[in-house]
Image 1 (cartoon, helix red, strand yellow):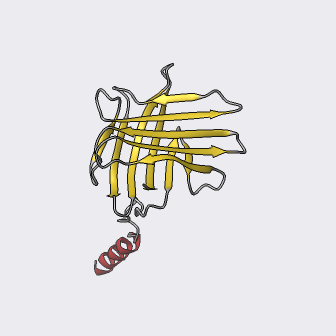
Image 2: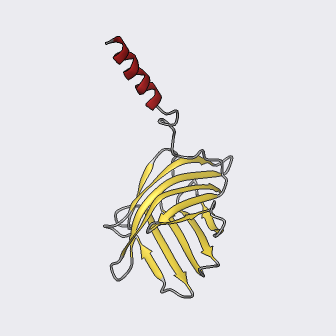
Length: 171
């Protein structure tokens, strides 16, 4: 019986992994890194096939804020623009709903276009949206970091998803 207990304990200890409690949220540093999945396709500043442009990032400590980033793929001749607009004063640690302005103070937009594909312009609305959680907001060091996910819909009713979003921006 003692051998069985020792064997079971050994197996239990060996099955534990040091990364079981790893925090999946990166550490915010203001590195101007962005990543998200648009309908399953990964857009990330770590992907060397994509050009990244921080079009507009303005986090206002008194109200309206705007985040606009763009990825372009020269080989595929496509681009995607992500916009999150806000009418709230962001606070670190808070989660905000991304919907239409009638039901939330944050909106989301995704614009996907290219030379050889039809353009897709998708917005959140009062029924369709998601959330944004402010992980870090440091006005002195000029860092804004957030986790986000949302669904957006085209005018024709086609739904698109933004998943596993991460922003770590210098503001």
